[in-house]
Image (cartoon, rainbow, N blue to C red):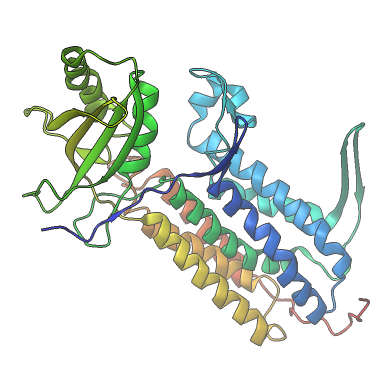
Length: 395
């Protein structure tokens, strides 16, 4: 019986300009910074804060988030690799196997959160100017009018929830940070991107790959979904016997042992590869390989949707209670909520192994606990009222 599993096959690239790909992830990463000034203007007007500072605040936050999220991934998750490939830590390029643009595919939310605290503090207390042409740097101690560190933290936290929604949607578009295997109808199969992208790179004779659901094969195992991998070979491939050997050895090896692929499909090592070979209208050889897809939790969507709900709730909290709440309460509540959810979602993710048998938690969960404690302390220590009657409307 044909199941209700979702086969996710979105191309992460929207368009390619020369060798530079424009990705959905990049668009989703920038989106909150485009929306934030509109909402921030309303907040600043309502609370009589200087609107002219919004653009500067967004600049501080954007730079802090990008740098911190990148360094967080490099330091917390893949330090050994980037010590060997330092250029890739700072530039969206790779020389392995040849030069190509990769985009910043490793961004850690914990690193971004830490850097956001630092950049918020710097914004509230320092006027920093950086120039590239000509190179220039200056830093002057100041105090932003009506924008204390705790007050700014509250406003930024609201937009951080929006950013968390947007970034996790970007992860979903990239078919990355997926969850563990599930046999529930909510499962998503991320196989198409990883198969379609990897096989042509690893198998030189392969021209194009398209992966979709198959109604020709019935799976007796309800944990898997029948898939059909359609491989079109290059024009120079003309020897059928050699091609069969190539499929049964090279292609099968990649499907079974390539880590980017074998997390998403199941192939019985004790059975021969199930496929048919024929020529299409262009006289090219095409192989239809029948296999089984592994449905996984769409943990990116779980985090994304909960972050969107959190953003709405926090915005409503500010709208109806901004004269009653204390500076820092929204920040503290945000850190407790977002990292509390992150802690539990890690149990559904396919990711880091536990740190030890005594404490079966991974790095992200340990970092989340630290962030939750920080949020609790920040919330409890909040004393100064959010509303400042001394401020006058200077806009």
